[in-house]
Length: 212
Image: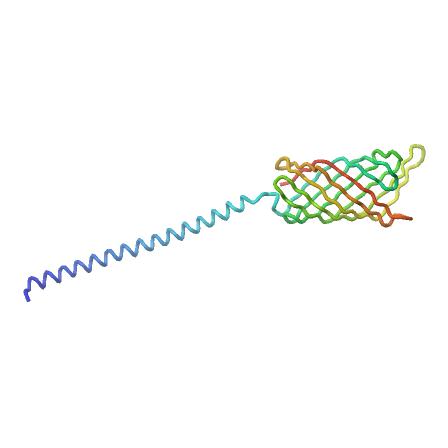
């Protein structure tokens, strides 16, 4: 064998192995860098997506939704056959996006054509539906009802009874804080009124303020 050829071949193989190791080392570094970059990018994207989703959840669908409002009411007292007029006030607190509780006060004793008025203090669960700006709801309430006899020429008297109500209504969101209570209706039952129970009916319209 030609010794010059053997030396040349050995030198070429040595350089070839060195170049191969160099290229392999670069490829490994690039792979590690790319893997680190991909992991970092993925974690960053996941964090951003989670934050964006959390910020995109409407306030109205979160828990702890509190609103308070007032309005005017018309009442059919059942004790008489006329329509009484008055005011109402309420507070709603929703524990979830659909389930909450309502406390409401009706005073339909302000204008009583036959001098007989009825007031109620009621509280109970409610279920709310959401459709854009429209939030219809249903409710079941319990509490007390007060019947007032208020003639012009005699002392006024009042009596308290157990009262229940089933009803519902529609809130329309006007702004981030203001909602219009387009209608609220209650079919009440006063079972402890003697000799027969009373079945008053109350309808209310008004405005609510939402605390956010």
